[in-house]
Structure formats: structure tokens, C-alpha cells
Amino acid sequence: MLFLAHCLTVVSAVRLALTLSSYNRVRSLVTRLDARRDASIADLRRVAWGVAAAARLVPGASCLTQALAGQYLLARQGSASKISIGIEKGTGNELKAHAWLMSGNHIVLGGSIKGFAHLVDHGS
Image 1: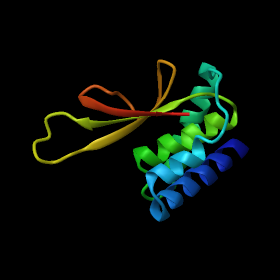
Image 2: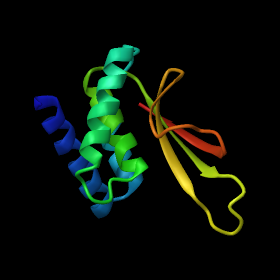
Image 3: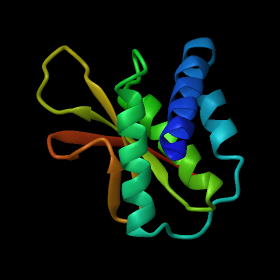
């Protein structure tokens, strides 16, 4: 229960920070932490569960909010991750972007990358 409360605090803080500041500023705060080791599958699942559960309680907690919050939580443990950003293919004139949190070869948050064109990665 304590971990979920921590996740709720982090997701809320990231959501507020993205509202008041730029993505690059928020990302720079998250990536200041020294995160170099690989996370265990159990840690990845725990962060994914906590962030997804907390995001259901935070209005406007987009995929980018969740990815940044998850990256912060993993980095606090010393675990490396990256945020991948892509756009949905075949949407015509409408541009639909999406963000994923990746750790190694694992998608932690954001769902499947199928149907999206990769734009950029931002590591920790």
C-alpha cells in the first residue's frame, strides 16, 4: 500500500510538472539520477502496476506522464530505462503520438509498439 501511495505522489507530481513546465525540463530532472543497472522483472512489473494504478486516479495522466513517472521510480532504484516516443502510422492528417517506458528489451509501460513509427529515445 505504501508503494502505491508513493506511485500516486510521483504520477501526480510529474503530471503537475508537465502542466507547468516543458517535457525537456521534467525529463532533465528525472535523468539526473544515476541509473545504470538492469532492473529485475519483478521490479519492472511492480513499477508498471504501481504507475498504471496511480494513473487511473490522476486526471490527464497520459502515456508520457506515466513513462516519466516510471522512469523516475526505476532510476531511484538505480535501474536504467528509456522513454521511446513514436507516432501512429496511417492516421492521415491527424498526428497521434505515444510514449513507452522501456528497460532493456522490455516494455514496462505503454503497451504494444506495433503500428507506430519510432521517433526518438530518451535514456536515463
